[in-house]
Length: 251
Ligand code: PGA
Image 1 (spheres, rainbow, N blue to C red):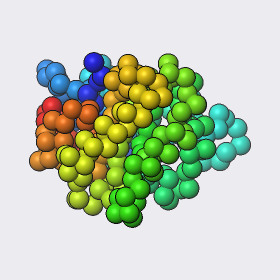
Image 2 (image 1 turned 90 degrees about the vertical axis):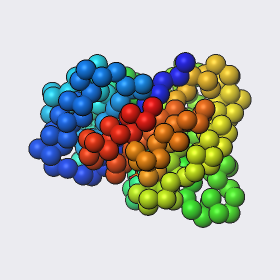
Image 3 (image 1 turned 45 degrees about the vertical axis):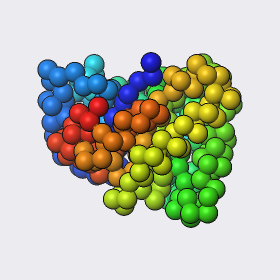
Image 4 (image 1 turned 30 degrees about the vertical axis):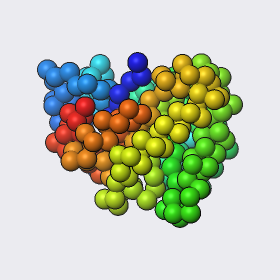
């Protein structure tokens, strides 16, 4: 059975002290309870080592929000996958629409990042999703298919099996406008079909596909009830332990 996962994406929010305090709160909320899903927080690079020191990694996974597309060397300001792994983090978000949109990350760049993440035993949470115009002009299936094919389809079935996907329609991110549960399910089922055609039914059935975009405690249960929605990637609502846990408990 594929994993159910709720992952927080803090983005560029919280200073180090605030971030450690938030991680401590989430960690505390998980004490003595066994949620029906894996719980992960993806935090700014600067917070990784300090957050790792205050959480119980058996109950709360830790990830970065990005990593470099190069191994090491003269790339001022970049943070490599091996540096991320050395903090104790085990996940990395890659291909988030904000990285694609504001920092020009192409499928070719993302392919490099995915390879380096896997080499360093990081689990990529790979984001895909269409913009509003593509939703409205009906090309959204093609867009998502191309994003998956271009960055991931040179992976072996074994390596592909290590990937978590996150479908995040860009028009739903941070806008308060959630995709309906039927829209999410339709896309997730489509993605699973593409995976089955490329890697076979078993790999497709084992791949966790998260939904992201204005997911909150009030709509999470309805989204997560859909058979192909295996959890959520949570931005705004992950910045408070209560709302984040409200989503975790929606499972
Ligand atoms: P949001 O962000 O929950 O604030 O819409 C989701 C994401 O970008 O991962």
